[in-house]
Length: 623
Image (cartoon, rainbow, N blue to C red):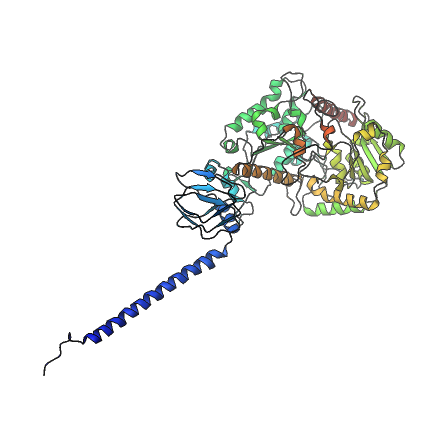
């Protein structure tokens, strides 16, 4: 018997076996391919599809712009781009609501503001996205503030976008002044007013006018030290200036000029300001934005820092006219309507709550008070100023059975007693607030603290000053009677106020009482929990200002049409508005041709009169 060779398998069987093996392999490969494509589609539509384009824009903003190396940037604003395969073509930086099938390979950057980009294939390179307007992405490498902007997108950081860096100034710019506190005023011993972190000595409550805690004999020019001490308690301080939303300069500008206004030449008056600017400009933090992210505080009116000439006889120093200082923001108790580098913040009152409960208790007390007087006025006439309406106001108070007057002229006067002033305000529905020696006066804030509705006669006394702290709709919390109505038409204040319906008066008083937290400075040694005080409001406003400026730089927005003399108008614009036009208050701010400008005289004279008034108060109070 012959053994069959293993190779002698019939050809038919071999063909059948081979075919079966090939079919199995083909099926396996097909299954593997289907599985691969299903996995790919699942990843594309389920995983990637779960994020909207708006979310990806947000993520890109958090991560910062993506830069391409050695590739040009081109800015376009195409309304629609379809079916682009972009080998060696620009990358689109878009803010689209819908983007499908993009394919971008090794491409330069191109910036667009399209609302829809369809059918673009993407490979290997991530899509770059930006907010609404076109941004030249590679240009962002020049901006060292990008790190600070990105902190705002970190939802795990409660201080993201709110960090403040404080310059460590040499003590000659601040603390050394307090050691020489007797030199800060010719007529007032400021040493007692710089105690208690700038609040001054506690007030006795013998007449029951004040609350149980938080009341101090605070000097109206003490904001320098109060604000700086509040900053020490700010919850988002940082030692890393690269993440700072703004940079604080703790220079006691108000105390500095107070030392040298009388009897000193301009070299002495300007010395500290020039020294400060020189110190700041040498700091690396200055180079981030050339000082435009810096701010400082001065507890005096702006005119003390706006000397118009180099004559020793002219008033004040030139801090706010220094080129470097024009880049910074300066917070003052009265700002200039015609300049863009200063901003009004409230005068300090006598109330400095240490906790929220102090505020709640005071507000509720002001709601319950019985107010016997329709209106009241605390002040002195200005016989040397023919444009002042104080004389007419005093006459109307004297001649009215529902008007109360506290005269603040020479001699012993209750007008200089905090308890007498607050008691009168607490017993009045309306408190008259004409211009002082300059546009503003502390009395406006004392009266609102007492729940009294302020009556203003010039928009510069509040409406164009404290736009961070007061509603732009001034009718919600105040009454406006134009000066000329009193000066020329002899309009009756009593009749004007009587015409306001009682329900309207009630709503206005409630609005004033609600404003109290944002108008007072909390005790610098503590911090409120729920309420935002005048310090909090001011710091947030500065952060918003700097952040907006940074975004404008990134997005290429410029203020080429900005007119600085209309600064007061820009402060009144609503969100999103950028242009100003004719305004009903234009006659109040028509600037004299000599460039000095003040409705009651020149700015220098207004400031000088303010100091004379301080001297008058010192003499009449016996201090």
